[in-house]
Image (cartoon, rainbow, N blue to C red):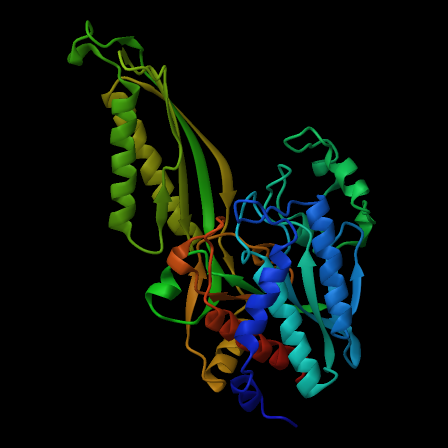
Amino acid sequence: MNDMKDIVQKLDHLAEETASKLEWLAEFGKDPEGGVSRLLYTKEWVEGQHALKEWMENEGLEARFDDIGNLFGTLTGKNTNETILTGSHVDTVKNGGRFDGAYGIVAGILALKYLKKHFGQPVRNIEVISMAEEEGSRFPYSFWGSKNIVGLAKREDVETIRDFDGIPFVVAMKEAGFGFGEESKGPRKDLKAFVEVHVEQGSVLETEKTAIGVVNNIVGQRRYTVEITGEANHAGTTPMGYRKDAVFASSQMIHEIISMAIETGDPLVTTVGKFEAYPNVVNVVPGKVVFTIDVRHTDKQAIISFTEQMTARMQEISKEHEVEMNIDLWMDEDPVPMDQKVVELIEKQCKENGLNYKVMHSGAGHDSQIFAPVVPTAMLFVPSLKGISHNPAEFTEPADLAEGVKALIGALYELGYKE
């Protein structure tokens, strides 16, 4: 039997191979300005999926689509009733980068290629997936690919939705060659683990000069839209003491929210990302403001505690300024822990293969959060230059891409080849 550490250390051309394949995949949906737009069920998406299917087949994998367009490439094991799954999503945001999602697919195919070459048939199936959709960039629905695999997708959720050009979801799916499957089949029973490799989309690994992040938790999120209503009035004739200035009240709220988050400290993060004032003219005291709040943490109770304190303080400020406040909680997602055994197994492989890693949480959502409640799941991160993502400037050094593939090879070997 080949020695895993020896093989991993001798994959000399893996960096160039991984970077080259990502460039190749980026041609499907390449924008004139340099980004990638490969939205669900578009011509570019269809071409990309079929090109990946051909590559899978060329590497000796059994490739197939499911009903809605998820693409699978299987290295068949001796026990065909158990499957280890890896991969990520093939869709992009509009004018996005060439690494987000795509890297996990490329890494998965390359990992299976080298496992097959050096170790032959695994004990159980190892499968790479190019998931149909995760981003929600074309239609107002996200995680369509992974939700179908675990039995969470509902036909009625997409039957009436349309894209930005008015094209119905169902029509786009049919024109791409896909359709609804059996809703009664539920989640797959053969899946024993899912490992997703992804670019970090943050700057922690780059800052700490670490090649691999072993993700042990995906943060929970609460998102709010806040509407502050004061009184619009003349900017010259309304004395300061008589005003009900919605911007003044909102700015104090925002200052307090961010200050509370800084005082609380990591891993809590809070963002006010959208702010609109009305009537938004130079000579009128603003009568209304609408802004958003995004709160994230790895611990559910910490999110609840922070947001309760936050809303209580905002109520106090609204009374002090004699303005009305309406706050709408429109997203409330719990943190999703990764499977401890799978995380420890990946750590073990990183240590044994001499890879530079750290255990960390994910501040962004991923397909892994859909899998984790039903399948033992973990994630691997590689550094993102300056933390940039969803942008044509998205970049990861080829050497770091290779380290991620090496870590995945080790993880899949442990999960797929050992009894």
